[in-house]
Amino acid sequence: MKFYKDHYDVIVIGGALAGLSSALMLADKGLDVLVLERHNLPGGIATSFVRGGMEIEAALHEMMSIGPKENRLKVGKFLDDMGVDIDWLPVPEAYHASLPGLEVTLHPGLERFSREIDEKVPGTYDKVLRLLKLCDEVFNSVNELSIHPMSKAQMLLKHEAFVKTAGYSTKEVIDTFDLPQQAVDLLSPYWIYVGSSFSDLPFTIFSVLMADYVGYGSFIPRKFSHEMSLKMAERAEEMGVQIEYRQHVDKILVRKNRVYGVRTARGDEIYADYVISSAYPNAVYSHMIEPASAVPEEATKMVNARRLGLTAFSVILILDREAEELNIHDYSIFRGDTMDTDVLYDNLAGLGPYRYLTCICHNYGNPDATPPGTCSFSVTVLPRVDGWKEVTADEYDAVKHKVARQVIDDMSAYFGVNLLDHVLEAVIETPMTVAHYTGAWNGCIYGYSHTMEDHIIARLQTAEHEHFIDGLEFAGAHAISGDGMGPQVTNGRKAAKNILDDLAEKEAGKK
Ligand SMILES: Cc1cc2nc3c(=O)[nH]c(=O)nc-3n(C[C@H](O)[C@H](O)[C@H](O)COP(=O)(O)OP(=O)(O)OC[C@H]3O[C@@H](n4cnc5c(N)ncnc54)[C@H](O)[C@@H]3O)c2cc1C
Picture 1 (cartoon, helix red, strand yellow):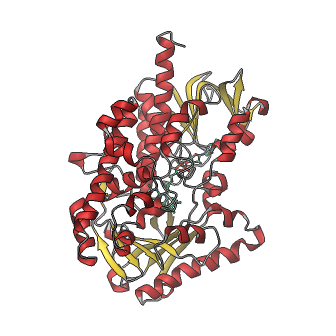
Picture 2 (spheres, rainbow, N blue to C red):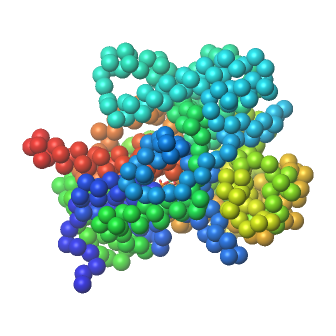
Picture 3 (tube, protein in one colour):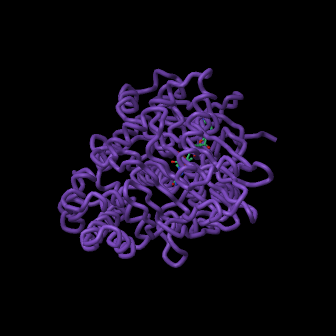
C-alpha cells in the first residue's frame, strides 16, 4: 500500500493548533487533506511533557476566546461545532499584579475589575469602566468586521468607536482618560501577551486583549494544552484527514507561480492544489520554495520589513508542598519593578536580569494538576529574539542557568520562601527549546509584532497583495490574527476560508 495518495486537495505543513484548525474546517467541507508534522506528536507549543511520572504543561497560561458553555466565544464555539470536546476549566482570576506600590488581585467582569481597581486607586471606577467599555465596543466591531467587511461610510455609521480609535496607540487613547498612573499600571499587565510597548501598540489590539480576557475570563483544558492538540488531531482523523508525524517538509513545490505540492526531508514528493504553511514566511521564502527563483522579490521584502515578536524563557517547577504553604496564593502573577512598557520592552532585548515576570500556579485553575501535597509553579519571561540569537553553543548552558536562577531567586524573595529548597522536578525552556521542537524562526512564538507601523488594519488591507504565490496560505502566529493559542485557531480558519473562497470563485467561473 502506498503511504501517500497520488494527490490531495490541501497539504497542511504543521499539525499544531493553526494547522489542525485549517484541517478540521476543510475536512468539514469535504476536502481531502494531508497534515505533515515534523514532531512525533501534534500540537507544537500546545503540548505537555512527563517528568517523575507527572504530566506537566509546557506552555499555556490561559486561553482567550473560549467563554463559558452557555456563551461560547469564537474559539470555544468553533471547537464545539467541530465536535472537539474539551473539558474547559475557568481560570479563577484575571491576574495578581505585583507592581511598585501595588499588590492587587483582579477578577474578570468589566464592573468587578473596575471596582477592584477603584478600591486600590479610589475615584477611578467610572473612568476605568468607560475605558473597558470602549475596549468592548472595539472588540465587538473587530469581530463583526472580520466576518462582514463593509465600506468606510458604513463602518463610520455602525462602528464609530472602532474607526475613531483605530489610528491611535494604546498610550494615546489611555492618556485621554486622564487616569492616575497606578490605575494605568493596573490596566497594563497583559501588554506582554502581545509584546509591544503601549506607545507602539495599536489601541485596537489592546481592546481585543482587555475585552476578551477581562470581559469574559480565560480558560484552560483540564488535561493541559495537549488535550486540545490531541483531541483536534483525533477529530480531524475521524473526519478523514490523514496526519503523518515525523515528516519534516523541506520544500514547497512551485510551478508558474502556483504551488503543486511539497517534498519531505525523506524525499517523498506529494502533490496538492493548495499548501497551508505553519512554518514562518521567513523560512518559506528563504529556503523552502523550490525553485528558489520562484520567490517574488516582494515576499523577501515583506519578511525583512516585519519585526519578529517575542520568544519565551520559562522555568517550570514541581514543588513538594501545596501552594498555600509556599505563600503562593494566586493562579496568575504579573510582577515588575516598573510598569513602563517602553522600559520593559528595552529590557527584553537582552539576556537579563529581566524586570517583568509572568507566573502561573496551575493548581489554582486545576486542583488536580499535580498530586496532593505538591504544586506546579512556572515563571516565564518573554524576551525579544535579539539577545538570544547571539548566544553561542558554548555559552548556552551558563546563560540558561543564570537566567533561570535570576527568575527563581526573584520569586523566592517575593514569596519569602526559597523555592529551590522545594523542587521535585525542574524544567527550563529557552528560545532554543522552542526552535528545536517546533522549527519556529529564531524561536519566535509571537509571529510579527503588532505595531503602529505595521498595524492590523493595514495588514488586513494588504493581505490580498501578500498572496505572492497562488495556492499558498499561512497559518500560525505569523498570520493576521497574531500570537496566542486562541488566535491560532482563528489563523487556521482564515487560511482554510481563503482556500474555500478561492474554490468557490473558480466554481462560479470568476477565476
Ligand atoms: C512558555 C510559553 C507560554 C505561552 N503561554 C501562552 C498562553 O498562556 N496563552 C496563549 O494563548 N499562548 C501562549 N503561548 C504562545 C502560543 O503558544 C503561541 O503563540 C502559539 O502556540 C504559536 O502557534 P503556532 O501554530 O504559530 O506555532 P507552533 O505551535 O510552533 O506550531 C507550528 C507547528 O508546525 C510544525 N512545523 C513547522 N515547520 C514544519 C515543517 N517544515 N514541516 C513539518 N512541520 C513543521 C511544528 O513542529 C509545529 O507543530 C505561550 C508560548 C510559550 C512558549
